[in-house]
Length: 229
Ligand code: ADP
Ligand code: ADP
Image 1 (spheres, rainbow, N blue to C red):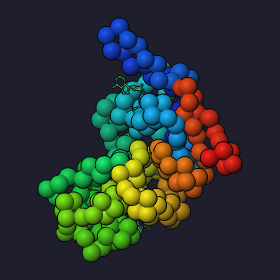
Image 2: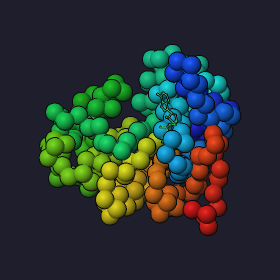
Image 3: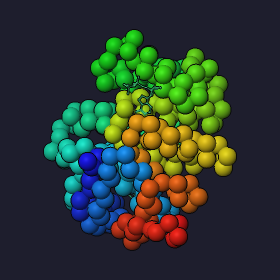
């Protein structure tokens, strides 16, 4: 059961006469329930890869399949629906909407998926409770700590029960102790719900906690043995 498959991915950024290839012929398969860390030097292409996997950007060549659907074969609308249903996103900065409460922020993907307000509220509340924010439902992002905001962002990423969560340095803005807590939370949710995780991190001690560690180097993914991480 694969949730994500990338085949022969190439990405070239063209700026004027400059053509910068980020990768050329990259393959990646992520199975259901699997957790994958992507590491690599700054500029190696980690963010670009996540954007391609998440359908936020289109590859120059190659294909991405999300839960069996070929992204390039979908209309923008269909791709949007698939992203909302099958994928969750967590970024280094929480991207919560400042004028809405934690509860409203987490309800939003459910409402966008076409569900009723009452159902959205119930799911969002349950998930916020499961990330330890049951007492912060009515708080706005500005009234939450950094760790709480990131946990709310994790709740928002998981609220539609995605097959896979894509995280770009999801704990990169937190102190070590809070980062470890938020990372552990994502692993708990993975174990409880079989949600696959693909997390970009520069922190090898966190990367080591995942099933596989892949290093992006010279446009390819290299699987590291645990002794190398
Ligand atoms: P990482 O996340 O590993 O730091 P990125 O994916 O952000 O790497 O960037 C990979 C390479 O692509 C870098 O050389 C970067 O400068 C270049 N790049 C990224 N985004 C763009 C863009 N929108 N236009 C042109 N070049 C880009
Ligand atoms: P069911 O899987 O039986 O439909 P619920 O949707 O009622 O279960 O959720 C059960 C618990 O799991 C709740 O605490 C909810 O917040 C949490 N939960 C639901 N979906 C996810 C998910 N994709 N990832 C992590 N936790 C989730």
